[in-house]
Length: 145
Image (cartoon, rainbow, N blue to C red):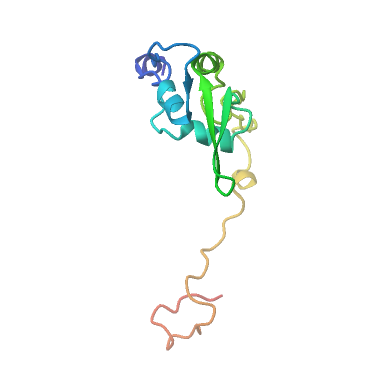
């Protein structure tokens, strides 16, 4: 197991180094997604919409569009993105949970196997409850339930 862990490929985020940019440069959500190394240009939009508080609030919000069709453009400074990247919460859901396998209870080797397995039962009838169980009704009429 240790050998496999040592040889496995690193997450693409662990070896992702964003290219150098002016720390005060403003990036929209699609540009920020690409800057951070996400495959989808919509990843930041998804974080903001579906996971409030996970991603930093935008540094600038521009109100655009018309009164009938308003539009908001959210912009983040490169430095805000770099700071978030360095303190980004773990990988995926429950990554910070400290879970361990639940061990089964100690059971003595000697003992009654029926205690664990339960009593043996005959197999259940595979025929339909609506069918009659006479030999004339079916050539497989062996069930006596």
